[in-house]
View 1: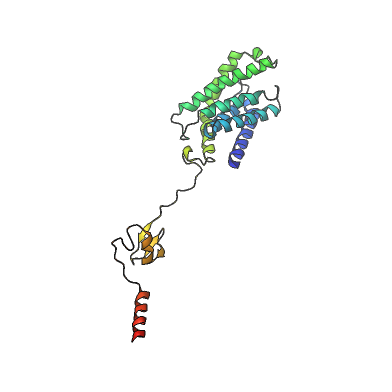
View 2: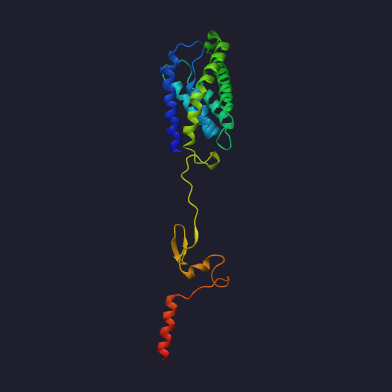
Length: 238
């Protein structure tokens, strides 16, 4: 859980810094490429809808509070919260996507849906900036920018997120090497051993293994201590 939190926080902060300091200053027509949206989608496709919803909310709230913020606080947090929840519902059961087109379709739908939701929430709070810019231009530009940027961001984010997943259903990512199979049998001297040749007992230990011991049809030789005790008994009788 701590690894997920640290990875998510680092990716969100890095995406916000790149988006504000680099992408927003490129002067591209229409919308700004939403790098934070792609990070939320990549994490939600691995962690699921609950974690994706939380990551989207706190990531959106972080960018709402970060300067230069020109909109109501919580507006983008609501948008990314919904995006993270919906994208998390599309998380594959095996943890690995069957098709490369799936993330692109999710990004395309999220780009259009987030723009419409952001404009709708803005209309409710009295922000009419989208009308002056042109909603159609924002939809087309955000769709193009996010889809073109998705192959360079989403697969890398998902690969990093899988390293923090310990669920076997997620493809075994984050787990250590598989334990070596336990070996049980007899060595050359006839001594019973388990694992890496560790002795677990002589002929007495064979009784704990099915197919060995008294009553199993296997012949056992008397131990050396048994011979000595019989010789001692004969000498006392004499």
